Length: 276
Ligand code: SF4
Image (cartoon, rainbow, N blue to C red; front, side, top):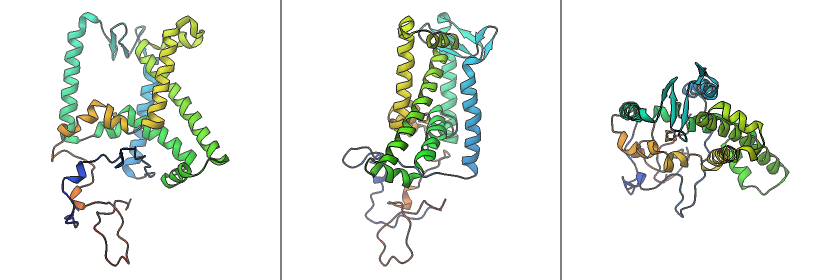
């Protein structure tokens, strides 16, 4: 339950005047999330397997000799759930997009960031694929922090090398997947089966997308939601006091930290959020 802030000096506005991922000197505050477990996380994991399977199967599904989903912005050809939209159908596409955006806005006002937490591809890949691989290779948050701060030695070289290799491999897969949604799986097969010189544009596209995903999931991470994604940036106007939200209530004070048993004169502190 929320309690009144015990710190009389805390500015009630200060909780929103700084980004948690930026230090006071303007440098990046690297996030080391602790491994989580529990009822909802388990179901998020199961759902992520289903969604990832659908995402990867998408380009292979053909209906009447046509892809089931295609977003060919280069030739302005879109196929959504088997229905083709040509350049002359642009007004229909705009209409569909408007319905989609209105639905997303109303859904967010009521239910909060359910899409972000459960279904967005950025979350699926970051939290359910790349983060889990990182835990597997480098350990939990504290072990990752220790490894990053330690000098380069054999263990660090092996762990970092292994992580980068696996990340690069998965980024390559995602790069090819995105290209398959853009130009079709047959075109992608053709590009990878022939020398790069025969389809330089396609080859550059594959390399560029793979590189971008490698950069996003190994380094940029949550910044994509904070500074790039339009939906993330719109949250301030999409949520109100009645929206369902998983957030720390600022009236519980800062810094969020455990209260130790034998502390004589406790400094002003917020609530502990480490109870699991
Ligand atoms: S803010 Fe954007 S990128 Fe981030 S999880 Fe939400 S929809 Fe996805």
